Length: 127
Image 1: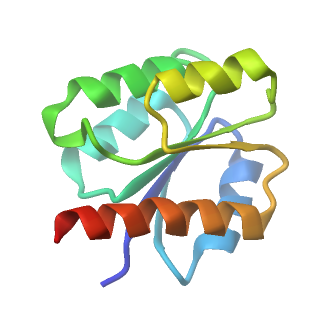
Image 2: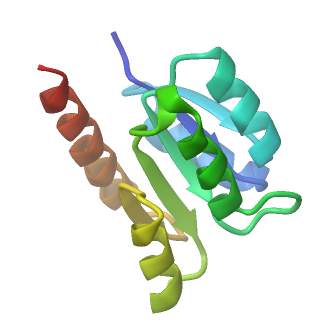
């Protein structure tokens, strides 16, 4: 059974790029806002989240805070995707408990390696 990845990003272009990188290896779902992403998380089994930082309404760190408040998602792997590679944002992401940090533009090999590392850790911890 394929792992399901949810990408939350306000850019349709980025979401289409992520979909082309991840399918058919993973089941792919997307949301264009943090609010919609949280609704999907509440209603479906998601194995990993790719989360943009800079979004209107709720930024990625606000979405991450809401994800971690949910008991069933407190250990869900989240990889931050952002154009902002400044050191303080990377530190903020690490302190927020993200599983990884990828700077846009996304390089497919780097992203796939990061996802495999996160999902591999998850599978090992389940045994």
